[in-house]
Structures are given as C-alpha cells and as structure tokens.
Length: 133
Image (tube, rainbow, N blue to C red; front, side, top):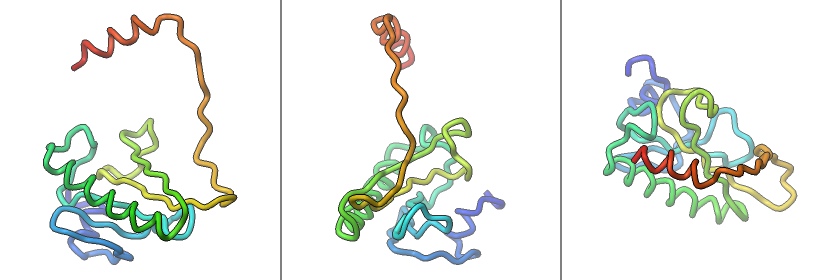
C-alpha cells in the first residue's frame, strides 16, 4: 500500500524508533504513546485486518509480540497487549498493528472500563456464533 504509513516505515521512507526487527515483523515506539515504552508491533506484509492474515504471518507476528512483551515485562511490571481490528474497534491505521504497553503499579493509565451486561439467551447467542465457523 503506497499511502500506508506503516508500510513507509517498513521501507524506511519514514523514520521510527525501532526496538526489534526480524524477517517478518517490526517493533517500534509509538509516536503518540500512552506511556514511556509503549511499543507497536507490525507485520512487514501489509494486511488491513487481523482476520485477513495468513496463518504463518499471524504466527510470526505473535512471536514478535511475545518477544517485545517479554522485554517490556522487564522494563515495567506488567503489559497490556491491545489490537484494534476495524474502525468501530478504534483502528486508525489500516495496517495490522499490536500495541504492547508496559504497566506499573499506580501508573495512572486507564485503558477503558468494561461495562458488563447480562444476557438471558446465552445458549442462543452461542449457537449463532458457532454457525459462523
């Protein structure tokens, strides 16, 4: 994708603060971080959505995410791993990317609050979803 900012970073047309790279993925500091050390991991092959990824590419990406998460666990005390898939889930750049956010006790970050809802028809919902596979 010629206009994809992440593809331009991969091609070194735009600089980044690279923290990890292998043959399939690239990890760099987020330019608009939630905290110090907030890292983005991307596949080198362009995919807009995680649901479009070939299994081998997804596996390689997750291996990279795990390596970054291990490093950031040493940088902080915990990590959040976040992947927004599609515009209504908050995906802004249409290139698969996974945020690895180092966390510390009392760091003040709030990544959203879960609102819970009770559904009486859980069996029906389960069957609707199972039909999609």
